[in-house]
Image (tube, rainbow, N blue to C red; front, side, top):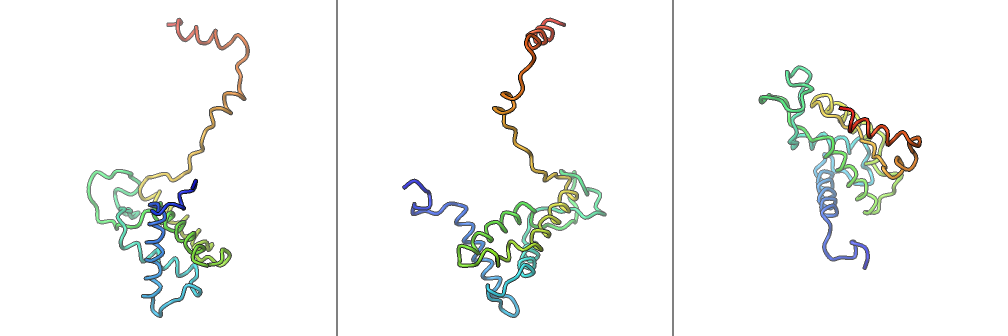
Length: 168
């Protein structure tokens, strides 16, 4: 039993994915008219994401707010609370996986629709400007490759070190 999926308890991720899937299923049932999963499109996923915004806990400043672009505003403001981009991105990832685990074909997956990807990118960009938070991915450095690829010219490393240590 080397994999965690063989254990009787589900991981936090699996539990969250199941809750998200059930929430989306409930949304489809309550949709007017009710909507079957097979008829669900990227547009319905966007509708669901916009619906979830009302339960958000992240303050997103509007362009007319004096705190627009400030990561840590000094005072309260009337700007709306929304779902944070990172939460939406993670939610879509879980729902995309759950869709396929529940019999959906990957090429028909509404959670992977181009419109959904564009919406998430738009939300990320808007929120990064409004909150002054950068969402750029940081590139990982691989120290073992850097150090083995770059070797100082012979003799110069010791001289530089002694100049720095004794040059004051």
